[in-house]
Image 1 (cartoon, rainbow, N blue to C red):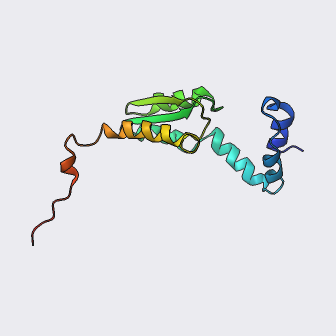
Image 2: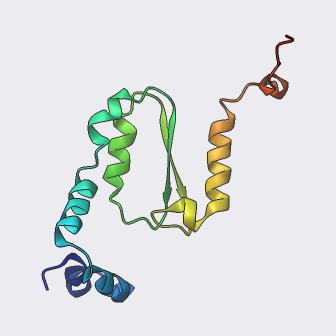
Length: 129
């Protein structure tokens, strides 16, 4: 029983209860795939490319997200453009699924600052032929 979920259940997450569904799924999963996912979480592929982001960015995270705060701070500090972190209460890691209304409101507010000031300029002007 050296699999990830078994270790979490035995040593780390008793306060949340056992992850029985994950245990069941893990019995059906290739251990190499689990290892690859673990590596990608520890060393996300975007880490080496943060300096290439030169536009404003926003990180929307859940207040109950167990991702270490240092991950978000690292991203925030290493993006070339301005970046802000917005925390959503009552959500964990996937805010867009857990709190879609809050996520959409935050995302729309962020993106709307880049829209033209005059919405009529968004309309296409077909060329007369």
